[in-house]
Length: 101
Image 1 (cartoon, one colour):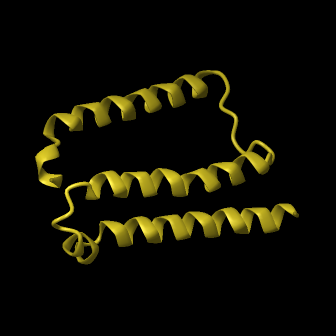
Image 2 (tube, rainbow, N blue to C red):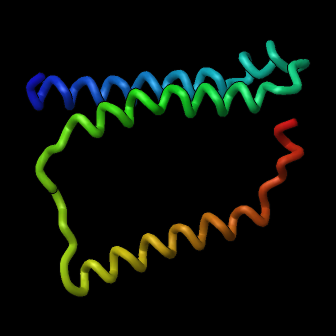
Image 3 (cartoon, rainbow, N blue to C red):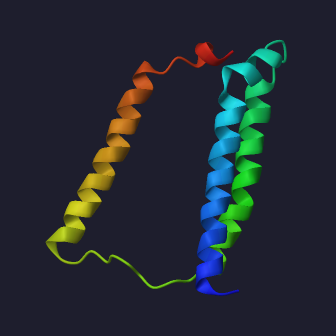
């Protein structure tokens, strides 16, 4: 498979994943399965299972490195990554798991 074909396949797989993810999270689908107590479990299982083929496609494509941070820029990139993780953890304080039941 050529690089272009593989990249287009990966892009289409991500678009399909996002479309399915949005569809399953829509109020219409949630409304149909409102009485089903394990809806969130099924939703998350589908999300994980549909990610596996995309992960496999990413392992097939071993393209060239586009950006490689070096020197102080690498430290800045690490700092920004850690800041994003810290912000995510901070937002969990405001997460209400009861909202999804």
